Image (tube, rainbow, N blue to C red; front, side):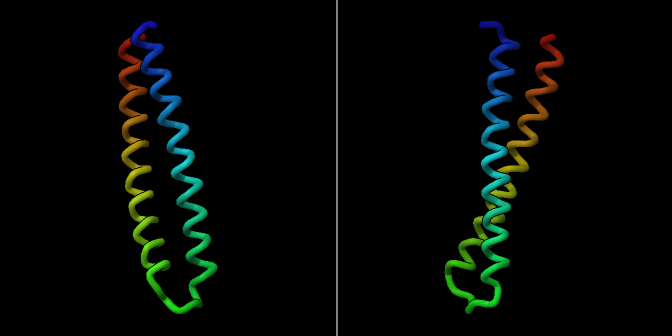
Length: 76
């Protein structure tokens, strides 16, 4: 397997996980918004922390994908 193929597979794998993160983030935001009127408890606080962690993680995965794409341009 060539180095370009390895980079392409890595990009595909990272895109899958980026999609999972985005869907999870959107779902968690929707859940928090629908439960905003409920008494704030540890679930809400945990969800807000989860939203922050998932959002930051998705950003870093996105940056990694951009880096891998630039690496792929150099290999071609």
